[in-house]
Figure 1 (cartoon, rainbow, N blue to C red):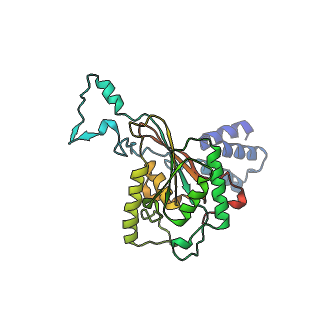
Figure 2: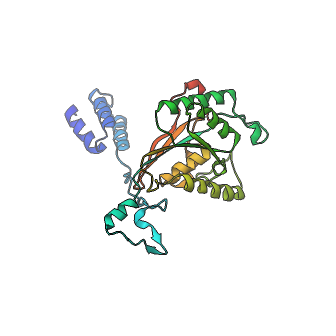
Figure 3: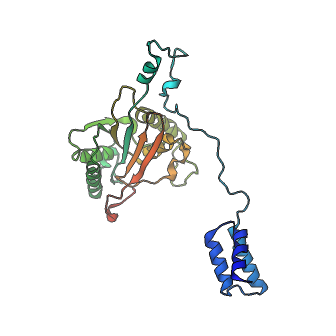
Length: 295
């Protein structure tokens, strides 16, 4: 069989799978497959592997983006069960004044490495490496040259210490603590894992708290906000992963499928329209490889 004819046949079977097409055709051309029955079956197997088994096309799920996910969509705001009445002589002006115009940038920082063997939160402070990681994170945030509005941190020792170190590189940025951001079990993960099994009560209590934190901090800008904002939240891996899933309207039970290094930066952007974008997820490339941990 000629090389050209073989190439055409392979293209027809493989449906445009370039790598397998070239490999199979070249092998046949060079006599690798030969003309024995076994060799012909080898060529058949290559071609069969290149074909789609059934319909492998990813189908549209039909789940449309919910633009009112934060209950702040101006077109959906209600007053006493009725749409807000326009009292201005210029209805378009009244409507524009009620629309968000600024973009919120939320930088979620995972705390640095800490002492896992500590008895209680007060002993679970940063390790020497963890303090070094926080220095790198602070330097990175400063190097971005952004005008940060505020830094909020979890009240747990490891997050508080991380925030305090970062704060040295961001003079003038207000530092605020919040209990809602403490680590916990946001929702039972799917698929389940065997090494970590909180009980139902913990999911019930932590889940409500972490969801409350999400609603407080992840939403579009207030209509009165005129300029884009940059806010830093220093907290924990479970909280950040849950926030990302919720903000992107992914199934929240998938949070444990994401991994985050200590001191990493996750950047969410919330547009005035309610659209959400993930600028970075767990960025830690600003640290030397030998400084990276995930404990």
